[in-house]
Image 1 (cartoon, rainbow, N blue to C red):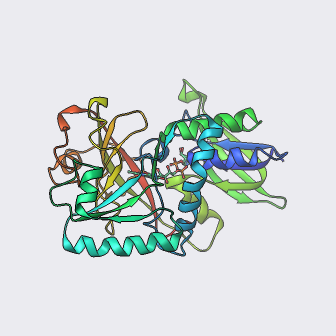
Image 2: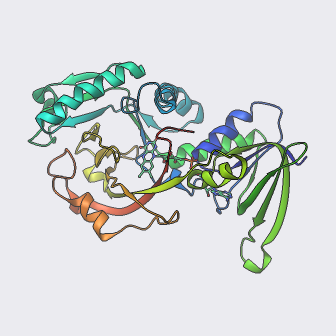
Image 3: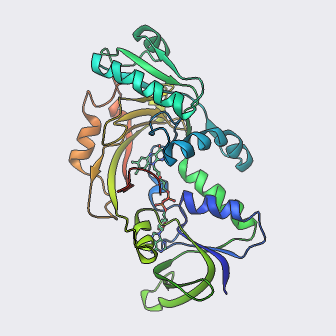
Length: 331
Ligand SMILES: Cc1cc2nc3c(=O)[nH]c(=O)nc-3n(C[C@H](O)[C@H](O)[C@H](O)COP(=O)(O)OP(=O)(O)OC[C@H]3O[C@@H](n4cnc5c(N)ncnc54)[C@H](O)[C@@H]3O)c2cc1C
C-alpha cells in the first residue's frame, strides 16, 4: 500500500481532515488537481464563521455549524491566524420579516447558539447606524465571526505538511475502485510546464476520504448505489476598499430565503467591506466568472439591509460556486 489514507481535495475540508489525522502515525496523502491548495470554493466565499441559527434543528449542518463556531477561536489561535467575533445581525425589513425573526431565534436556541437576542428597530440602528430605513428589528448573534478562508485553508495545510502529510498537487483523480485490501486510485499527474509531460499514475491506500467539493458526487457515485447530485450555485461579490471597511461593524444579513442567506454586507478580516453573494444555479462546475447581471444585482440599491453603500469604492469582484447537494443537509 502506498498510503494508509488518501484525501481527494485540498480545500478547507481536505486540509482540516489532513491536519486532524496528522496527529496519528499514518501515511497520508492529499491529492488535488489544481496547482495550489485552496483553489476551489474555499478561496471564494464570504469568510463568515456562522453562528448556527440558520440550519434546521437536528440536521448535521446545524450540529457541525455550532460546534465549528465554538471551536474557531481556539483553532485560529493554534494556527496563528486572525479571526474576529464581530457578531452578526439578521435584519427584518417588513412586518413579515419580523415574524420570521422569531422563528430564526427559536431555531438558533434549539441549535444551541449562545447569546442570541432580538433587537428592536432602535436598538438595531444604535448598533449599526447604516442599516436600512426600513429596519423593523433584527436578530443579533454575538458569536458570528469573520476569517480569511484562504488563510484558514493554507494554515491547516501547512500544519498537516509539517506533521508529515504529503501533498500531491496537479494530480487529477479519474477513478476510485475497491481492491481486496483497500482502494486503487487512478489519476493524471500534470507536468508543471509542459502538457506533453503529463503522466498516468496509480496509487493505493487502505482508506479514501472524499473532500472533492463540487466534484464529491462523482467519487461518491463510483462507490455507492445511493447516488448523489451536487449542483453549483454561483455567488457573485464586490469587494470594497478599506476606506469603506467601517461602513458596518457586524455582518449584516437580510432574512434568509430558500436560495440562501441573501446579499450580506460585512467587514472582512483584512478591513475591507464585502457585498454579496448572489445565488444562481448553474450546470458548469468551473463557471467562476462574474456576470454583468450578477454584479448589477449586488449593486442594486435595495439588495442588502444596509443603506448608502459606497459602491464607488469597489476594488474587485469575484464569484464562487457553492456545492449544493440534493439532500438538503451535509453528507
Ligand atoms: C458564494 C459562497 C459563499 C459562501 N460563504 C460561506 C461562509 O461565509 N462561511 C462558510 O462557512 N462557508 C461558506 N461557503 C461555503 C464554503 O466555501 C464551502 O463549504 C467550502 O469552501 C467547501 O470546501 P471543500 O474543501 O469541501 O471544497 P473545495 O474548496 O471546492 O475543495 C475541493 C477540492 O477538491 C479538488 N478536486 C475536485 N475534483 C478533483 C479530482 N478529480 N482530483 C483531485 N482533486 C479534485 C478541487 O480542485 C478542490 O481544490 C460559501 C460558498 C460560496 C460559493
